[in-house]
Image (cartoon, rainbow, N blue to C red; front, side, top):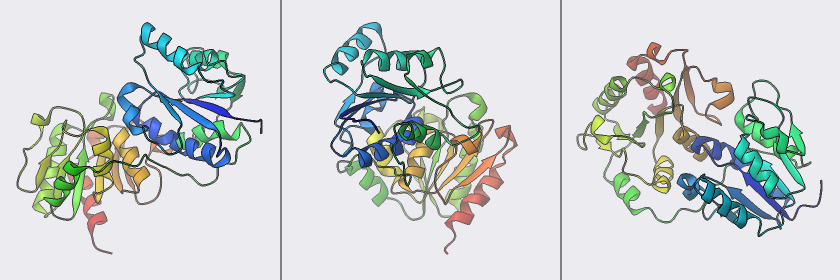
Length: 312
C-alpha cells in the first residue's frame, strides 16, 4: 500500500449511493487512522456527512461553472495523495484529475465509468458482473491494498431530534413507515396501492408513517393511526426516524438504503432494477421483485408486512 496522508472521495450523489459508499469510508479510516479524508458531495446530501467521525472535510457546491471553479480552489488547498471517484461521470473524473492527486482511482468500463471518466484515472478498477454496489465501491479500497473486512455503515452522531421523538411518542407500536417515492416511473408502485396498503395496516392496529419528499396532500391526513410526514422532515430527521420505526415499506430508493444501513427491516418493491446489485443490505429484508410493479398486489405486500410484525 502506498503512503497515504490525504485521500479524497468523490461521490456527489445520489442519496442511496452515498449510503452504500459509507463502508468504503469505514474501511479507509480503519486502515488509515491518521490520514486526512475528504468527501465531495452535492449540497442537498451534505447533511448526511457533516460531522461524520471518519471525515476531516466535507466539500459541496452547486455543479455550475462558478460553483465548480470555487470547489476546485477549495480542494486544492490540500495536497491529496489519492483521489477516489465512486461516481464514474465526466465531472467527477475531471474533479479527481484537477485535485492533482498522483493516484486517481475509478472504474474501468461502462456502465460504471461513463462519459469518458476513465480517461482521468491512473488506476482503473475492473468490476465483476452482477455484484452489489457496496461490493463494487469496496473494490476501490482494495485497489489500494486495503483490506475491506466487514461491511460497516457509520452515520454522523445526530443531534437530538425533538420532533422525531415527539412523533414517536404520540404513536403506538408497531410502527411502519411507507416511502412511496423513487426516481423513474418504472420503479414506482401505483399511488392508490400505497394508500390502500396504509389503510389496511391501520385497520390491523399498526401506526403508519408516510415519509419522503413529495406532495403530502396526496396522502391521508394525520389521525386515526396515520402520521403524514411527507415533505415535513429534514434529512437528519428522516435518518433518525428510520432508526426508530419497526419496518420500512419502500420503493427502490435512498431511504431504503438508509433504513437497511441502520438495521431497520424493510419490505422493498423492485421493478426492472436488479436487487442483487441494488437491494437492501443485510439480513431481515423482504424484496418483492417483478419486472412490472403493477404486478405486485396490495394483499401480497400487506401479507409480507404482517409476517414481519408477528411476535417471535
